Length: 416
Image (cartoon, rainbow, N blue to C red; front, side):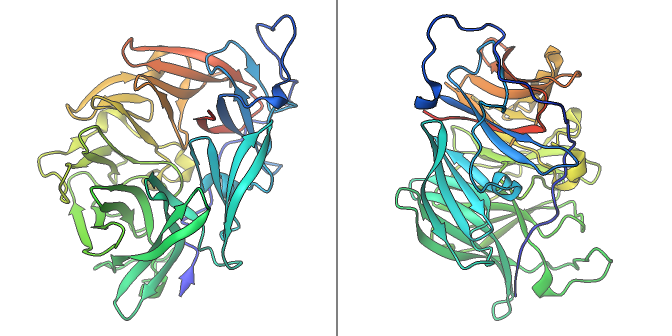
């Protein structure tokens, strides 16, 4: 039996305000170049909408994220064609190109050219198949790797299968499509009505995903109703997907994270792989798999109870929240609003403590030169800013402001 493996619809709080024309707080003088003929260097992806209207998605471009200017989607935002909330959520931005899932059976590669989105290629599967719905993604020399929405029970082998696709992004063709085989849980999974689920109906949600040392690592949970304080990590060979090994750890709770583009894991310069957990009492933690190994490090468990709940939105479900983490350098990572030394288990700085606004959780976090981390801030009076954290100087400075009539910012990326 094939089914769409979506644990719930995403909700968000709307901030509806009338739009104004794009303007600059420090207007340019003299002749201004025709911006529609130029591809700007950076892109800011914003969501517009409110409780009484559908969402719209715009890309704002700028040559300088730290410029003292005000950007607005009105007359200056680029609106992609055929983009829905599903496409925005199940998507990935990489090296200036955007890869969108559309209707569950199309992946469209698009890029901003001359001020408009242009499709560079696509892959199409059978309508209504959900085969090309991208959940977790990972780029390597083989191309774009992603775990499909689709999940099915293999009765002959008594396993739950979720396909791993490898996409040649230059040709936009499928290089391979093979099932990752997850064990059926040895405990009962219950549905929303409290009834035991049949094996063919058991959902499976990946929350972390990485490939290194010719191995695939997938942190997952079976559903977010049956809450267990055990972290599950599946390891298998790449790309053969053989020699499946299930890792378990009950020190810090369940693997945390959502099932879409955001990442709840990262790998450092040493090749050590870190992934986050969350316990029943909503405290976060970090576990590690050291380079060259396929076991959870028994000597490492970082309880992050001091940082509290760093999930992006309580309404999305704390247990499988929208937390997104990014590795910076030298053992430092951004988790929520916190700069954390993950190797030495030490909180370095809460970016909210600078008093410039509250850090917003995004699906991607842009870093540059191994020292600059760009985050999204929202102030108490609903103003939105891009801000740069300088790791070496330990400073946070505001850059461009986004007009406050938006609903949210999903990511910041570099176009060229």
